[in-house]
Length: 138
Image (cartoon, rainbow, N blue to C red):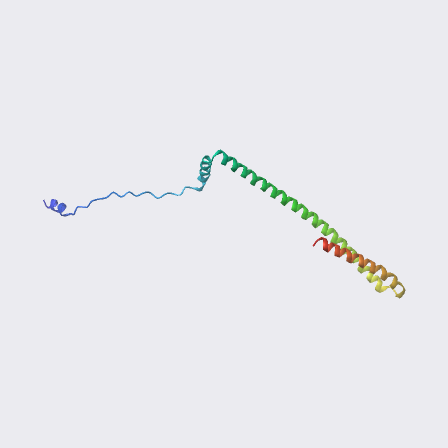
């Protein structure tokens, strides 16, 4: 009997059922593509057609950008070649002018006037070429 007393002495509690929802588990990113395909299934025919047209436009503009980049690189190489050639010519002309100026120092008074005119003419031509080159690549 003592066992019955013990059981009777316990207060009765009403147990409520509590439903616990399991937490949503994040799906891997690899399945995102299938969700996109499912989303596309809900588009109307007009929307699908418009989406395809936009995709085509984006593809075309990407192609045009790549083409412009190739053309710009080609133009840059061409300009660099012209620049190097022009600069090389100007440097060669400068050396000739410096050589003529050295000859002027060595020459006597009689040859001075004759050489001076030639050097001044060469200087004028070279300075005009430098100004033109500078303006061209500015």
